[in-house]
Length: 76
Image (cartoon, rainbow, N blue to C red; front, side, top):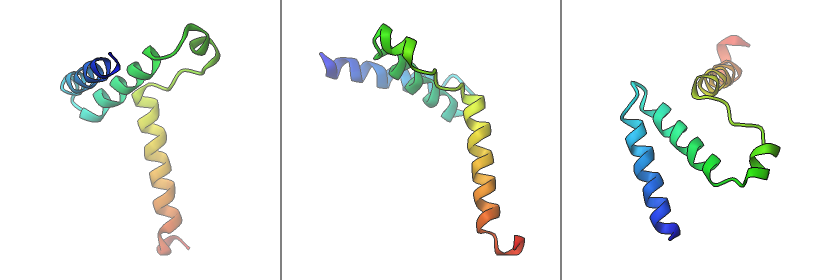
């Protein structure tokens, strides 16, 4: 039963990834939906929801930029 559910979620994730101009957004949203669907109602209440893809991408890009500046000898 769990394997069928896992296959279904993978299909959903792949389908969602084809619906956006950024394929990573569909994958992110699919995984986020999968994780939320596996939570109990109590877990949903007690857990802070994952950020949307735009917020996640903005934070990720900023962290990558900061890391590049940290490792760039020209900025020292």
